[in-house]
Every structure is written in C-alpha cells, then in structure tokens.
Image (tube, rainbow, N blue to C red; front, side):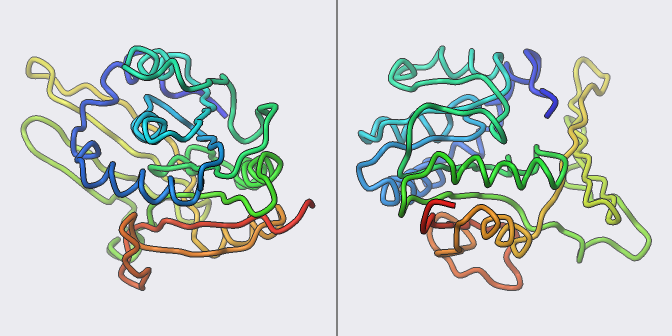
Length: 243
C-alpha cells in the first residue's frame, strides 16, 4: 500500500466542510457508539480524526491505524487527540496488541487498498483484532457504472471556475483513478489518487473468508434501506467465532 496522503494533501484534507456537517458526524458517531456498546474501538485509516475524535468524546476508547504520518500530525494537532492511541502502518496488515468490540473503516477508505489481495487481508486483519461478537463496519460508495455512457470511462463530479473533479474507470480491473484540480492564482493544480472499487457482494465474500457474517446493511448512517438506487452503503459484519 503506497502512501498518497503526504503533507500537501494532509494540510488541506479537512477543507471540504461538507463531510463535517453535524448531521453526518452525529449520525455516524451514534451508529458506531451503539455497536461499540461500551467496548473499545479501532479505526482503520483514522486520518485526521473526523469520526474518531467525536466518538472518543462519547466515552469510547478509540485507537487508530494510518499509513500517513502527515495525516496523523493533523489529527494530533486537534483538541482531544491525546486520548486516542495511534499506530503508523498499513491497516491491511498492521497489528495492535489488543482486541476490540468494534473496528470501522469509513469514507471509502477500503478502496485505498488497490488490489483484491490487500482488501482480503484487511478483512482478515479486522477479524484478528475483533472479540467474538464484535463488528467490522465499512462505509463506501457503489461504483457509478450505470451512469457511464457506452464506451465512456470518465464520470465527472464537479466542473467550475474554481475546481474540477472526475473519476476515470477501468472496468476490466476494477480500478478507478480520482482526479482533483483546484484553481490556484489562475492555474489549475491538483492530484490523482488510485482506488480499487468493490461491490457489496464481494465484500461479503471477503468477510466470510475471514470468519465474519453480514449482520446489517444500510444506505447511510441513518439506517435508510439499502436498495438498487443506493449510491453508498454502510455494512456491518459480525465475528461469530475464532477462525
């Protein structure tokens, strides 16, 4: 797993305030706190602490794993960060010497693992850290392949004078490159990030291989039903026994 979240990206990672809307944060934290049920929680890809910090403030003991020291530096500059244990490493393989009631991986971060093998290893690593009856939660998007015209590979998201963003799909390999550009003093500057998109059914099979079973799946943190029109999903797998 390559670290694409260096200092330049880390310093502006929190600029998108749309993901910090109180209703989004509160719904996610309430959802996760109920699953933790007073036990300890581990976040894979903790980043700048968007969810981990408010979850910790609810009295949940939170730890996190992240590959990027620069993202962790942003987290540790925030109030309350000293209550969160941090381990630097690849969350598909890095170990923490503790068992947890809850492990969570949010905001599409499973797709930062750009091979199927890494994603399978992520589920196995989650299962290895979970207590019996504990849960692994993933929030990620549904690939927008239905919106691609025949023969096209580009899915635009935002185009204006200040920025433009688009995704580039390779259907044969399940690869997606996300392009982000902003206008800086009249010139567009940006970066590209590679992802491997993954379907819910594929994630269910990964969970099964790791000794976990699907417990529930929703369209969002407010537990809206998951349907054919859902653009994202919150999935919860439960560890039933030691593998």
